[in-house]
Image: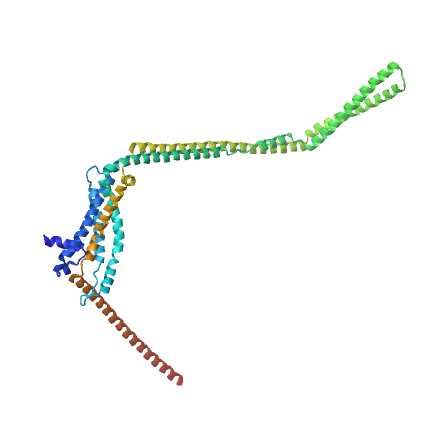
Length: 450
């Protein structure tokens, strides 16, 4: 049985088993170091099992699953491999042929102690990781009370966040909707005015003829009125006798009547001229051009109105789209709130750690206990290195040092031998090259002399 157990712990201690078998006095030393490595790995396995089991089952209740066993063994194997590597990296320096001076012992100790510093940092990290699930298990009843408080806080925070999302969604919805509603239609008043202006537009020549007609009609009305007034005054003057005024009024009435008849004839002629122009090709051409312009403007107005109709349709479609998106997002948020209220348990590992921290903050005694446990775990983590440093240098250490030194010497000798060989070969090649150059130079001189 010893032949099986001891080699395993020697291997954990980072010892070369074949060489260690030649040094019986070091059996127990490396066995104890291996036990220390195994102890730290076992502690890591157990505490990681607590953490994994808690994470899977949301608490320490429930049966141990296969995932918990595999995960904890894997974490323990990682810690064991790390500890074995760090112990293996610590070498016991010294000289076996002469007695070391205090200064030499101090220098050797300095070289050894350098390996402790990275191990100390790792020990702090690993111990903290190991301690967290261990404390959750040790204070599970006290932590459970704080978990309920944190659950309520988490639930309230989640609902507050979702309600805030709903408010922001409502604001964005109203903003988008107002933006769409504020899109103005194309103004048709100018096009309508343009059509009205074209419709009211008159032929310049016809307008000129009509202006002449109006002037003649006014002249006719004025002379006709003048005639009536003169005749009326003449008849009044006749009653009192045919005095000088009678003949003047008579002459004025006759002249006014004559002028009135002339203007009446001119009005008639002007009407005929207007009627004739209205039937002329020139006027018809103007009317055709006017109708074309009216038709074109009406088409443009129709296009604008169609664009406005399409714009209204697009606005309606966009508003309908944002309504659908708003309703969809609103339903999703409310669904999340309902699912959260229905399914939320909150007793996961992170909340448990928060609850533990709150528990420790309420009572300083928990913090003191935490520091003691942390110091204990750090000591356990550093124990393999401490044992390696405390044990004095032995024949096994000297044997390992000699093997390493011999290999280094053999390697250095091989390098020097190969270097010398390459240097000799290099000199030989240079001499051959110089000889060839000399022969070639002599041949060239003979050719020149010939």
